[in-house]
Length: 284
Image (cartoon, rainbow, N blue to C red; front, side, top):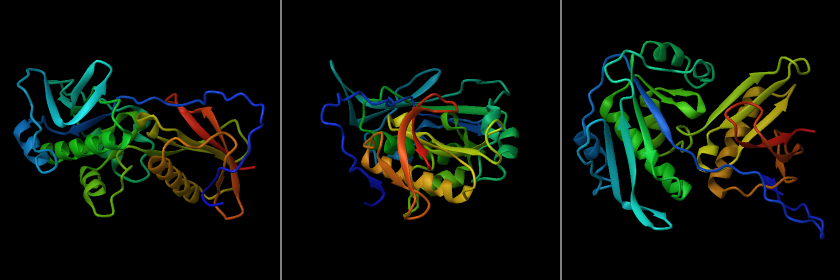
């Protein structure tokens, strides 16, 4: 039946229930620096001009706001241009804040914790009033803006706060601008947790980040499977949901690590923070 099996029939007299779902959240990233950074708004605007020629930034004192007139955000009472902000939450203080959990889930970058711990300053990049945008347009704008800001400010680390992920700046830029674009590299993290009160060798792995766009993440609890293979499968599932949307229902099955393996899908509240809806994969 392919990647997912959507052929399970529902009982004729079943009353449809509203499925558990996520709702779009604020998209944020911290840029971490060893030395105090200087924000050059004109340089950022120039970096964006090729894709967004009308972008501009009004004069403000504490927060740099960038407005994108070519992308309208619709509300009941009208529409406004999509907006993104840059601010220095600890301006003048040597106090870059990185959660301890963010130092532990960076399988893609061995030196992540070392580089983050050497940073003293931070700049916060965030969207503003854009949650109602189509999620693919929203991610495109977020990544275009984050890459332009990263290219302009030259941080030592890009810290994706909501997904506990640290990324090397050059890796973030390459992932987004390379012809073989890794679209979700700056949005999604795949995490691994040992389960101390489970069976011997039991592991929980999940994705975190799709929930920020209003899409479900994935979660699987297992023992005896290859962790790298499970991690790659989770990436594949994440890309599938990003491409096709929130279409997986309880009871659908997903192909596991072999053509014969069929894992059943069930929507649950995530076992590990942040609180969000995940598709739990039952391996048996």
